Amino acid sequence: MKNVAVVDVLDQKVAGLRRNGRYEEIGSVLMELYRFVSEKGLLITGPPAFICHEQTHEEVREADSAGTADIEVVFPVEGDAAGESGIGVYELAGGTMARIIHMGAYRDCGEAYEELFAWIAANHKTIAGPLREVYVNNPAETPEDDLVTWIYAPIA
Image 1 (spheres, helix red, strand yellow):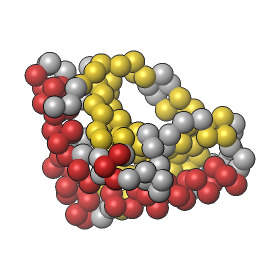
Image 2 (cartoon, one colour; image 1 turned 90 degrees about the vertical axis):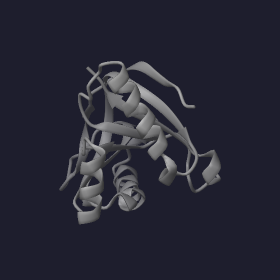
Image 3 (cartoon, rainbow, N blue to C red; image 1 turned 60 degrees about the vertical axis):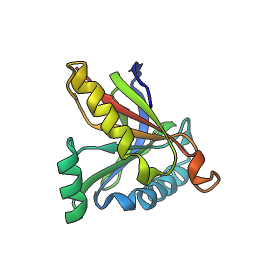
Image 4 (spheres, rainbow, N blue to C red; image 1 turned 30 degrees about the vertical axis):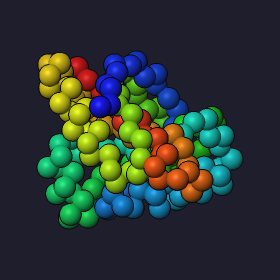
């Protein structure tokens, strides 16, 4: 059983890229953002994250199936850079969030989400913004079973 913790997340300067598509494209969108960050000489200060703008499991399924998922990926950075179409540097809001840690393949994180949503309901909280997945280690260098993903839900 995974544990849900309530944490205070600080605002964070990030380079972000937002596109519509399927969730399986997150990796390639992250690589596109990484190229932007590298070209602009920004210093990456933490692990990348995916910001999920669909709020329910049903919305996620429908958007992914239709290829219209609102995919936003970010890298925490130092420095500034002029934005381009759907890409730029901005302040990602923090706040009080419920966090659960998933260990294993990204495709298997559904159980962690179910537990997180159950905890939110059981504790009479509501989701107060886009969910986040923070990819703690690099899938190119880490066996799938050892991948760590922090899943955050802003709560009220």
